[in-house]
Length: 349
Image (cartoon, rainbow, N blue to C red; front, side, top):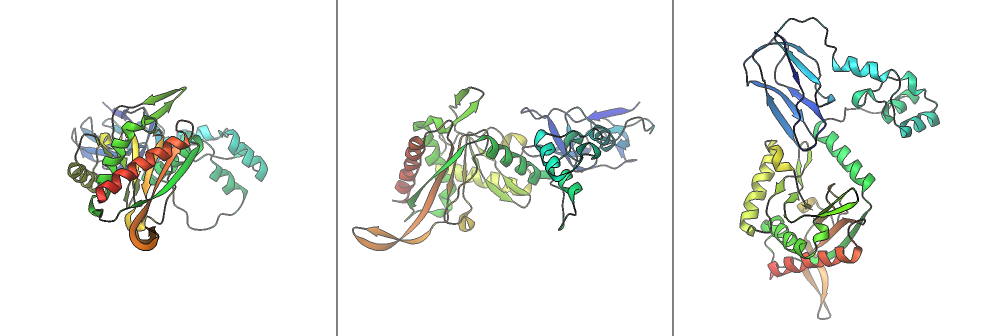
């Protein structure tokens, strides 16, 4: 008897997933709980074991395709009868009638492209802007599909930029005497303590309500070969700087290795980012939706400052706070930033 394995609900309100990598091939005999497929969600890559034993009769979704929860991914056991169409075939049929957003239709009209004549390459066969522009004329350059972590980053950043009216506040901080090995951990601690004083920066906007959170689970942006990943450091207010440093190192190693669990990438209330030597003078980071603020530290270096009327060299860096102006007023964001700087400078003393 054939077993049809469907994309499961992986929690956290996820409605779709990308087939990152098949761990089996058609015709292969597998046992129950053998590794079956890797699914890329908007948080992480999850390896899913096979729920049944038998021969892999047919794989219905190719790697790189994004499909909704409940889509049949693979058939295990039974005979190949071809009755279950491949997802590409289903999407092609849906795309024949030119499913497209009003914006894409407007672009098509401007470029003189008949949307109804196109076959969509987007989710569920939708016509994308790229489909329209490709039909309008020749394409240049080497092209690669937007897949995996890079696709998720693109979608997440686009949503944040579209929905959040963001403003960035910047001020310098004196890091003289500061142990830069403890920079991220100390910043997490300083942010958690300051967020208690300014709860509107540790909040979310849900519908017509501002939700003030009473936990301090801070995200830390980590650059990996696949793209930017933001693991979550829990209970930053209750941990010591040394404990936070150990946890940050563990999460960063896991992010680069791609071994973090989904729960280690969910539920942050505020985010901290610093690119070290590559950070540049200052940044205007994008808010990590659905949070309402993010703090960034620029490159720390010896710079001229005025002290007691004299120009001297001091190790300084710029602290940036980007915030959702719907929830956070400029004055409050500035006060929060100054509170963080005050705590960082005390740690330098």
